Amino acid sequence: MATTLEDVKNNLPPDAVGEGWDDVKITGLVETGDSLARIMMTYWSGRAAAYSKFVTVSESGSTRSLSDVHKQALDMLKYWTDRANREEGIVDDPRLRSIRFGRMKRV
Image (cartoon, rainbow, N blue to C red; front, top):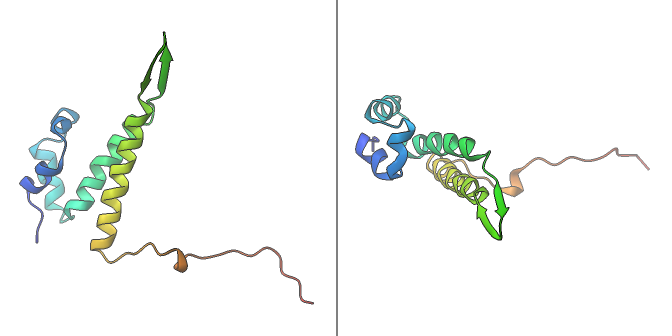
């Protein structure tokens, strides 16, 4: 099923338009033929990068955990990445990862 403008808009947070994700940008991404998951990965990748400078601040007995905002953006990026990989048949199986050995010595 092809991704539509409405599909993307329904999955974006309400403040995405203020970050430049208007109908023109979304339509351009939809026309590339990318899946909904790949388009959402693009969005959350940008948002995680923008939030990477947020830090937790403690002053006057109160704490603002702004680094949590970055963590949540990374969590959403991971969700959409995993979903895109599943849709494309890419499975992250630890048993299939390469391994390395140190120097081997024949005895």
